[in-house]
Length: 126
Image 1 (cartoon, helix red, strand yellow):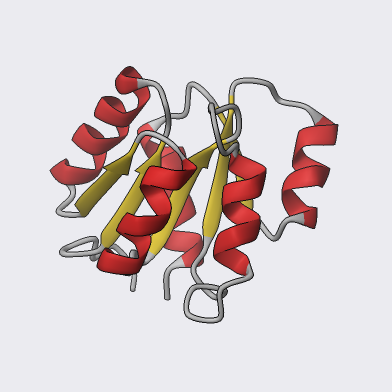
Image 2: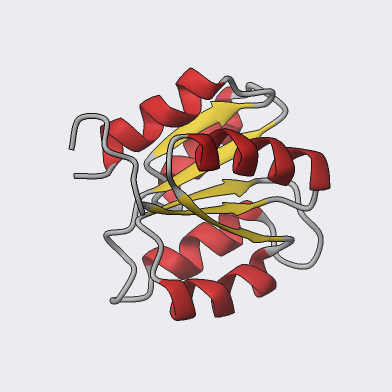
């Protein structure tokens, strides 16, 4: 799936409206269907309804953080193979390690670039 982002379902979970809007704009330009969620609880219902091809999740969120959200996604047999990319404003080794423990597939530091976003999709969506 080289560069065919048409109709790819991409979910962006972040409590920041700016981040959601930025990601959504970038992804829609290349033809993705974008589903956004403000936190983990909001996301879980939408994941069940939409079955996204890939999920980007912010680490620091109220109620249910990115680690908990990722763990819940990966523990669900329907979604365990869905790539989950962690988004964080800090580029910490600890965060990356913890992300791997809960099953995340990659880690991007905010602010991310369009290339990083699309690169992650290219790498993980077959």
